[in-house]
Amino acid sequence: MRLNWFDTNEAQNFGRQLAERFCVECAIPGKGKGHADDKKQERLVHAILSDLRSFLQTHKPNAFKKARLIKSFSACLQENGHDDELAERLTREMILAVSFEGAPLVQ
Image (cartoon, rainbow, N blue to C red):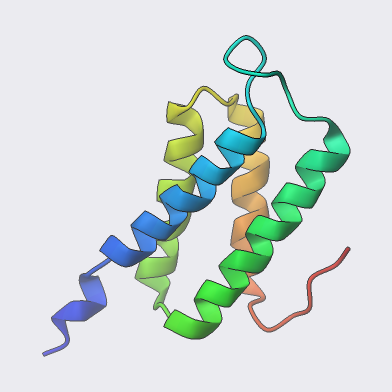
């Protein structure tokens, strides 16, 4: 029996790491150095999606693990005070990256 199919700890931890990286580098106004400008934020999103693609290629997570990774990413953003709109946009980007895993990243 393949019980490790349900073990999502590694994927969830990776999702949280990606979100924490975003939170540190794009601080919320009033909660740190200030909000990152749009270009810096887009470069960071591109880097995070690139790291996500690398994780997907090396770890080959199943659909359940991918969903938990994305959910932990989104929850961590919201826990750290990012607004729902931003969290939803970034989550959508991650869903697309996971869905089209083999497609090249668009710059």
